[in-house]
Structures are given as C-alpha cells and as structure tokens.
Image 1 (tube, rainbow, N blue to C red):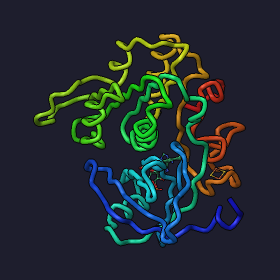
Image 2: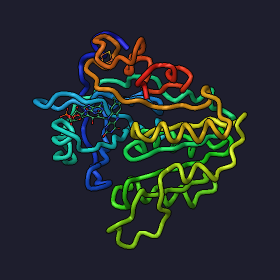
Image 3: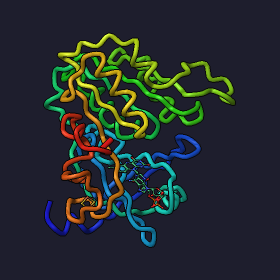
Image 4: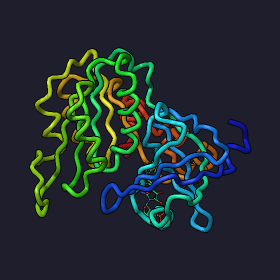
Length: 276
Ligand SMILES: Cc1cc2nc3c(=O)[nH]c(=O)nc-3n(C[C@H](O)[C@H](O)[C@H](O)COP(=O)(O)OP(=O)(O)OC[C@H]3O[C@@H](n4cnc5c(N)ncnc54)[C@H](O)[C@@H]3O)c2cc1C
Ligand code: FES
C-alpha cells in the first residue's frame, strides 16, 4: 500500500445497518470508488467520521462475501457512539485493511477450533464465513461462542444456521440467563464448552478472540488438553492511533499490535508480561 493510502481515508457508503444487540450494530459498507477492500479474515480497518476521529474495527465479513464488507461495532465511546447514529446512505472514511490476518495457509487441512466471546464474534465471523465458503480447505471446524446474557448474543440467526449446518459443529452459551425471557440454551462460561471436547492436539489449530479475561481461562484448558502454544492463535486489542506501525501507541513490548498483530500465535507473545 502506498504512503498516501496508508494515511488518507477512502470514502465509503453505508448500505445497511442492522441492530445485533442493545450495544452492537452491523454496518454493511462499500467503497465509493467501487473497488473491493482487499482484506483477509482477521484484519482491521481504521474507521473515521468527520469531527469524531478514528477507531480500529475488525472486518466482520469474509472477502468471499464481497464486493462490500461488514463491520460489527460496539457502542463504546464517542466515535462508535456517533457511528451508531448513522443510517444507510451515510458516508464514513476507511483506511486499511491493516494488520496480520489469520494464517489461512498454516490452517489449511487442519481441524479448527474457533472460540469467541462477546464482541470477539465479529472478527471471528470473517473466518467462519471463509470456512463456510471453502469447506474443502479445512478439517473439522468447531465453533464455540459465549455471551454475557441472552440479549448480548450477536448474529443470533447465523449461530442457529451454523448449529444446523453439516459444515460445522457449533455451540453457544451465556454466563447468566437471569431476565433472559424464553432463552433455553446452555448456561455457563465459555470454558464449559471447551472442557468436554475431544481435541486431536497434533492436527488442531485453536483461534481465540474475546475479552482479556477469557484468554487466560480458555488457554489454560486448551494447554491442558495438549495444544501447543504455536497451535493457539489469538487476536489482541490495544488503543491505536496511526494503525500502520509508525507512532508506537499500540506497543506490546517490542511488538506493535497494529503491524505485528492483531493476530498472533500464542508462542509469539506468551513470554511478554501483560500481553494477554
Ligand atoms: C485491532 C482492533 C480491532 C477492533 N475491532 C473492533 C470491532 O470489530 N468492533 C468493535 O466494536 N470494536 C473493535 N475494537 C475496539 C474499538 O476500536 C474501540 O471500542 C474504539 O476505538 C472506541 O472508540 P470510541 O471513540 O468510540 O471510544 P472513546 O471515546 O475513544 O473511548 C471509550 C472507551 O474505550 C476505551 N478504548 C478505546 N480504544 C480501545 C481499544 N482499542 N481497546 C479497548 N478499549 C479502548 C477508551 O479508553 C475509553 O475508556 C477493536 C480494536 C482493535 C485495536
Ligand atoms: S497504532 Fe501507531 S504504531 Fe500501532
């Protein structure tokens, strides 16, 4: 990507907005110039809105579902709050795609265990859709998802479709269903879905994306089940500014989350205090 493309936002139009949960919306967008974004699953873009600044947001759709792309955005503060007020037809700026993608070549032919929590299902969805569109490239694909409560479950209809699909083994759970109305699914932490799994350690890659508290617990179970650190992949979040490895704002020791990550193999970061 040339220097000007690194820093200059490209105009994008919002094609559709869908409410996913009380805190999260899905934006379908397309480049105003009609070109595709050119991303790979796991990469992020810097989303900007005049007067509100920029925020890194993972691409939530697979490149196989183009030419447009989707962003799942949690209302967290000023920029994401302003995004939530936008409707179809509005314009936003996009820089990117940036960062490391999931290593699809290294995952080829292997069983995949895709574990996400909360908003982590947004970046994971890009990989899930890719697997759905290229089932011949992977072994058995297992999807596990945990949300805090029934109302916080993202992509509800798609989860139901993945659970019914012969391509995947898929389950979800919620931490607590108090006030959850007619929810009749599993209740418990995401680790309760990982514990009973029989994992063929030598031929499985686990991908874990979620809130920081989830990583330690899930990785402990995976390690106990024999998965090596090189076969566990995580996606990390840090506060960012440039998004392209220039400002040092997102440093994790000697690594830059925006350029060396956000996708890391566990063996790249496990020795760095505070990385997870
Ligand atoms: C690689 C990457 C991918 C991301 N993907 C997504 C995504 O797909 N969907 C999504 O909703 N969010 C995603 N985020 C988080 C998102 O970037 C932040 O929520 C956003 O920057 C907040 O901006 P704001 O202006 O709305 O909030 P602000 O008003 O700037 O801040 C609100 C609060 O959020 C905190 N905050 C700001 N940035 C971050 C951050 N990066 N991590 C943790 N806390 C932060 C601030 O300290 C403050 O407490 C991602 C972050 C990274 C680094
Ligand atoms: S955000 Fe500037 S170096 Fe990563």
